[in-house]
Length: 600
Image 1 (cartoon, rainbow, N blue to C red):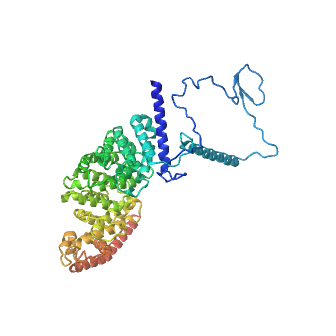
Image 2: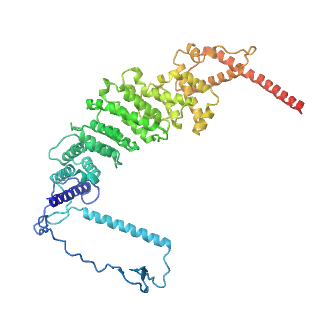
Image 3: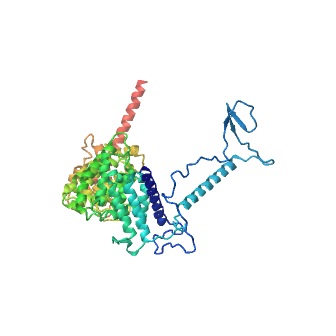
């Protein structure tokens, strides 16, 4: 009984490998049948050819092939003898005599150089690999069991039977199929993805069609292996052409109630909760390709069940990157996570049940990720817009935007350190929401991030940043960039200038709110002791506001015309103060020289 079971297992493995080879050859682009998935012509044996008898398992004798082994004459046997004299070509090691061939070089030929030997070795290695590939191709050729002729055309029934054999093998012997499991699934997805009929791009189900059988095989196999961490293994695998692969997986699970496309993601997150990998970079890449293929209009209940798992995932993800000596996400990883989150926030079922906890967990993760890698402006605009449209309450709408802007405010106060490019990127996001032109080209202008509203509570901190004389040197020291400080100051000054010019141009209430010192300029005759230094700082702020207003794309007037006289008084006081300061400096310098002479 054991012998019969072992023979059946070997036969099942051979059938499965043959089916994989058949499907692989049909989906490949080389060979006589390259690119031809199915032909209506089937192989037929000619009458002139004689059939070849094939031995089955029952025809084999149990003792056949177990006779005495015969050693080939070409093999040389070493013998152990008493110590004798060593002849030419024989190396004696103790009592063991080993035959060693003698290399005889032809006379008159110079010894081969090292470069020539290396080239000959490379040529032999290439020739050996080519011969090995040819042997593999010949061994994978499918032949007729009656006439032994190579089969190059297959009908729908043959393909379907091969897929059924593969699914049976996966169901009965999953441990034997584990080494070739990914090859089987990837080959079947290529079979589904390759167009054969005009209705290929539709969701039409055609009975007795190989494509429908392949989709059924995928969904049944994935459902059968879902409890064996197949989701985590697939998403953590480097897949060639991942867009096509995950598109086929989502298409196959679309009308399968037992394993919906959204529940497939939930199983992945459950597997991650049980065993967190060292890196989720590859997982997020595959998930980004897969989630965009899942519809957001259906599967309302599975989407709502997925929210809790996503929230747990982002909380653990944030803990993983916030730990000491942890590796921060790369730019590609951040882009993939933003794609996933932007698509999730577009689900229609979230209109009644707002995933506030999920958005807050993602906002914390995004704020931490801004420290280590660059984020594209379009990705930030997309995820902030999705959050603004998905949630209902006004405070929740700006959750992601407020987290990003707050991180910039912490950076300009030097309490946190952002990536060099993210300073200007977040400033551009604020200007884009305010309606200003930016130098970054955008494919879509339908963004609504509310960033200009999120930065309003921090405008006074932005004014302090502009007024500080040493911030450019500090930013240069942190980021090693000479132009970052000036560019960031101009953009933030433009944001303040646009905000100040929103009110009526003849109203001075905005000036009183932001720069109240402008309404009371110092007097040249009655100046306070520290008035000159304060006036220089105030004039510097006015200069940056003027520069920001000049960069605006429309009429921008942060300071009304009525306040121009006060601006002139400040400028006059500073110009007059320079002469007085120079006299004071000369007097101090002369006093120091006189004291030094007295000391000598």
